[in-house]
Image (tube, rainbow, N blue to C red; front, side, top):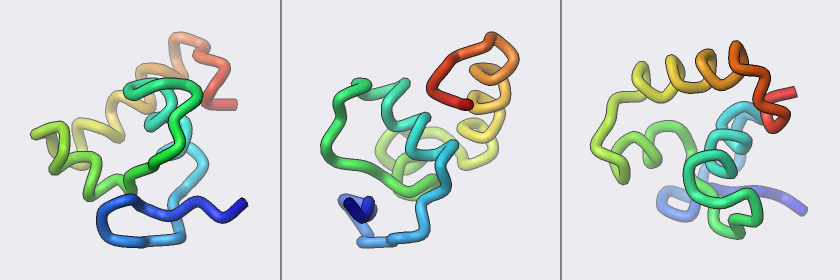
Length: 65
């Protein structure tokens, strides 16, 4: 299954961004966002989201393995 961004159609979504989609929206999410579109949807910056990825990794979240 090829995962593409629901908004812009980007198909090069990194695995950590896929994991962030699952963490923030729902582990069974069917529609994914690239980092840029997710930041826009959430009213955050891409840097904010990258920081959250690192936080979740440090906490040991199994989605980010």
